[in-house]
Amino acid sequence: MSKSLLLLVCLSAFFATSAFATVNVTSPSNGGTYSGPVQFTATASTSTCSKGVGSMGIYTAPYQLAYVTDGSSLNTTLTLDPGTYDTVVEEWDNCGGATTAAVTIKVESGTTGVYVTSPANDSTVGSPVTFKATATTTCSKGVSSMGIYTAPSQLAYVVQGATLDHNLALSPGTYDTVVEEWDGCGGAATTPVKITVSSSGGGTFTALQHSGGWADYGQRGPSFIDCSPSPCDDITFSWTQNIKSPSLSGEAMQTYLSGSEGYGDALFNNHLIGVDSSQGLPDTDHTLIPTLHNFTYDVYFYMDDVGASQAVEFDINQFFNNQGWIWGHQCTLAGANEWDIWDNVNAQWVGTGIACNPVANSWNHLTIQVERTSSNQLLYQTITLNGKTSTVNAYYNPGSAVGWYGVTINYQQDGNYEQSPYSVYLDDLTFTYN
Image (tube, rainbow, N blue to C red; front, top):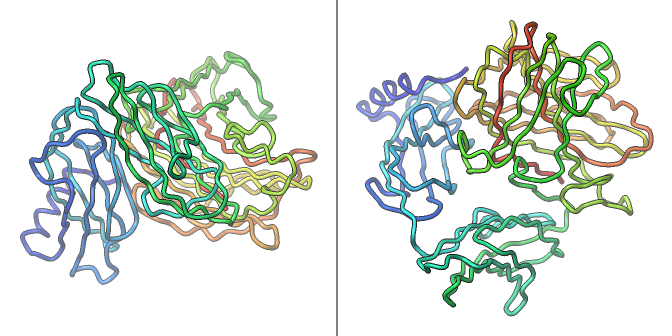
């Protein structure tokens, strides 16, 4: 269920006074001043809940949940605009309790540095490796360019400007990479990032809401045949990238739905691997996709009017050998507030009994995990919404997909009986495969 920040603060005050649960923030320091991305590191413990700490999160402002992670430790970097932030680091235990720690910080601009948000230092990743970084400088002429070194004197990639976002194909092995910025005054700054590239054939795509490759379609029952461009079949839909507010990264994607007849849907699709790959992985020799079994769809979404939506849907799709594995996840909102999953063979939604209650006008963090089993069944594993993980553990057989080859993701929003207009914002959209 959704959590009220005011209620959680009151609960945390009780727990803190009783010394039954703690949140220990080691970074950033309270009252500290920072430039560039801010590192948040914290741990939590509880003596009142025998089931332990379930998850931790960071609020950058009241009701603005910027990050959530499972477990009793938190280590992440947030990119924040210049200003003063009364942040709150919170833990939620598995008994319904919560505790907070308040940390006030000031973020400034105007210093020189390279801030790498992906990949993490000392991490193991698949190829291609997503490098994402920003740079700042005191040089009045600004940052001219940025680059990636995979070894000393091995400059693998260069881009103009102060932002770098690139998928770099690397062979398995350990790399002492360096991300560097060069300014217009002859200066430079570097940040080293040590990574190990695995040979498993897996990898991660980050910031997909900012990526190319998106397509949009209208759909209406009972046939649900794609129509495009908008408006079509009495459905109006659109998507816009690089939205600054509301946004966690400064580059959110807004999706919009309206129209003149009820129950019209808007589908937004991106081909990640295989045919029409937007990520540079066409897999033309068909050696990668058949080896992939595990997928994770991780996204933050912000709804300006939950009551206007019939449902929002998040799908993972895999196609090869004339078969199609469609892991459909639908948060049904109108009159249900329940997660439904897709039965490929019978082409119908099946209720899970798992509650879906996204918070309006706030960032909701969703993670879905699925598997194509060794016997080629679809396994729906878990759904995690705002720190609460629910186990689905449901198996289905695949459907048919003659001649199509690839891995894709969908996001869809459905209109209610009035086709009330509403927007949804997607940010920090990450997809992991192996």
